[in-house]
Length: 64
Image 1 (spheres, rainbow, N blue to C red):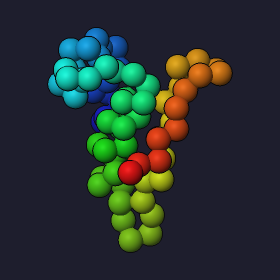
Image 2 (image 1 turned 180 degrees about the vertical axis):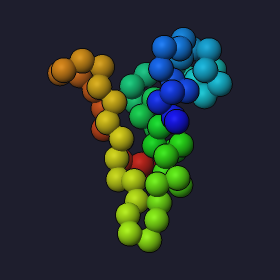
Image 3 (image 1 turned 45 degrees about the vertical axis):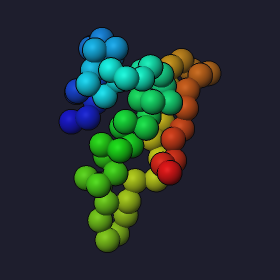
Protein backbone atom coordinates (compact mmCIF):
# COMPACT_ATOMS: atom_id res chain seq x y z
CA UNK A 1 0.00 0.00 0.00
CA UNK A 2 1.03 3.58 -0.56
CA UNK A 3 0.85 4.50 3.13
CA UNK A 4 2.98 1.51 4.17
CA UNK A 5 5.69 2.86 1.87
CA UNK A 6 5.70 6.17 3.81
CA UNK A 7 4.90 5.17 7.41
CA UNK A 8 7.73 5.28 9.99
CA UNK A 9 10.27 6.32 7.40
CA UNK A 10 12.63 9.26 6.91
CA UNK A 11 10.85 10.86 3.97
CA UNK A 12 13.95 12.83 3.03
CA UNK A 13 15.44 9.47 1.98
CA UNK A 14 12.33 8.24 0.11
CA UNK A 15 12.95 8.05 -3.68
CA UNK A 16 9.95 10.30 -4.40
CA UNK A 17 11.39 13.11 -2.28
CA UNK A 18 15.09 13.02 -3.08
CA UNK A 19 14.73 16.10 -5.29
CA UNK A 20 12.02 17.95 -3.34
CA UNK A 21 10.97 18.71 0.20
CA UNK A 22 8.58 16.12 1.70
CA UNK A 23 6.05 18.81 2.63
CA UNK A 24 2.40 17.98 3.17
CA UNK A 25 1.67 19.32 -0.29
CA UNK A 26 4.25 17.08 -1.96
CA UNK A 27 3.19 14.06 0.11
CA UNK A 28 -0.44 14.61 -0.95
CA UNK A 29 0.60 14.91 -4.60
CA UNK A 30 2.63 11.70 -4.34
CA UNK A 31 -0.22 9.75 -2.73
CA UNK A 32 -2.70 11.09 -5.30
CA UNK A 33 -0.46 10.04 -8.20
CA UNK A 34 0.10 6.57 -6.73
CA UNK A 35 -3.61 5.96 -6.12
CA UNK A 36 -5.18 7.69 -9.13
CA UNK A 37 -4.92 4.88 -11.68
CA UNK A 38 -5.36 2.12 -9.12
CA UNK A 39 -8.70 3.51 -7.95
CA UNK A 40 -10.06 4.56 -11.35
CA UNK A 41 -13.03 2.51 -12.60
CA UNK A 42 -16.09 3.12 -14.76
CA UNK A 43 -18.10 3.91 -11.63
CA UNK A 44 -15.71 6.11 -9.65
CA UNK A 45 -12.34 7.80 -9.58
CA UNK A 46 -10.10 9.45 -7.00
CA UNK A 47 -11.25 13.00 -6.26
CA UNK A 48 -8.87 14.26 -3.58
CA UNK A 49 -6.26 13.33 -0.98
CA UNK A 50 -6.07 14.95 2.46
CA UNK A 51 -2.84 15.03 4.47
CA UNK A 52 -3.07 16.37 8.03
CA UNK A 53 -0.09 17.64 10.01
CA UNK A 54 -2.13 18.55 13.09
CA UNK A 55 -5.80 19.04 13.95
CA UNK A 56 -5.67 22.54 12.47
CA UNK A 57 -3.04 22.19 9.74
CA UNK A 58 -3.02 20.18 6.54
CA UNK A 59 -3.66 20.15 2.83
CA UNK A 60 -6.28 18.80 0.42
CA UNK A 61 -4.97 17.96 -3.05
CA UNK A 62 -7.48 17.65 -5.91
CA UNK A 63 -5.11 16.63 -8.68
CA UNK A 64 -4.19 18.60 -11.76
